[in-house]
Image (cartoon, rainbow, N blue to C red; front, side, top):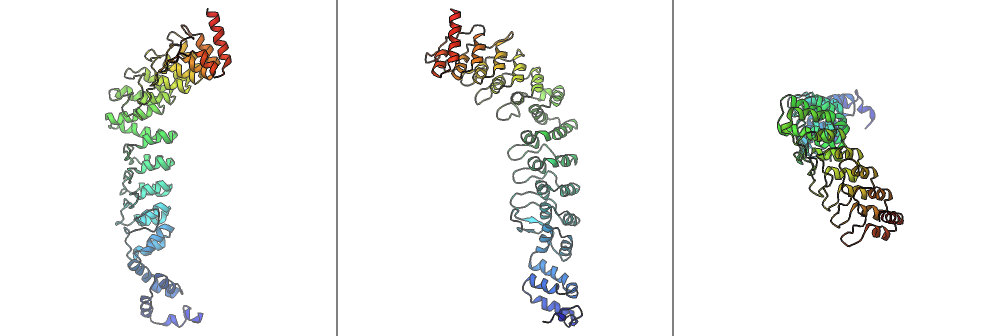
Length: 438
């Protein structure tokens, strides 16, 4: 066909308009119909609306889904005008089964199409996909589209606390994937930080182990809710627990002052069988530990259920000098409570070669027993001799009441154990000590 026939004033353009519509009805695919419509401006003007109506009836409004994915607002508008169902779903995005056009716009960050869709009364901004059962707000947060999140938060129809398949709210999704969006969600004053997921985690409990530096605003939000009237024991305990393990001593002190009867520093709201005081100590929260030691309900000698470690034992094992200093300085802390193997805090400090902690445990008005035996009958001197910790051996030998000749369950002495392991400086030190003692 000569190109001149396709021109706007060519022979084809002079045919009756009804004939073009009749011809289009025989075209089997949208692509063919679109090709005819794109031939020239006259054809386009004549057939374009028909093209969209055809797409709605024959292709289930695929044009609207394409527009939402690629951000073509004019295409989306024409598809809707042609009768496209704004609540129809598609599997066009392989990641998301059963997504609406609004969800596609949220996932792909297509703000202009999203605002167009939200302007329709028939739109449900809370429709969730089939696979993750997640609403558009949750997807926009996960993908990090801040402008989309702002727009959805500004729509009163949006349920800000809708949970997905895992029970995660949009706030929890922000904690996990996009902590930079936390401020936006919390400042909307619509996101409820108390809602837990199916694993029992709340945004606060999750952020305490993941993005500690971003937890302050969540704590402040919880505290505001308490001041506004949610001072139930469960909520107060939740805030107290995480404030303690994250080291926010001012919040801990405030809650103790006004809601102390509702709080348990020992095991309630526990994590891995440990209470707020125990975890604060193991995390090196010196100010919290010092404050909670002054609070009568705190049990500073509570043993965790697995290996029976006390806070002092853990601090001595991990070389946490400041925590050991605070604990040893408090008369309520028992220096001799062993772990499941009978090892005392002094024994584990000697084993790990923590010289300053051994010195602290052996000094002052309250002193650890240098002859305390574990389940194998071994004293702290055995570990020091076995590993060749010469400075620890010398410190132990200076302790009041030390008996370097105590044998273990097999009848061996520290000197014999040191000799077997080639630690001859330890052997010589022990030999000189016993020679002088005699």
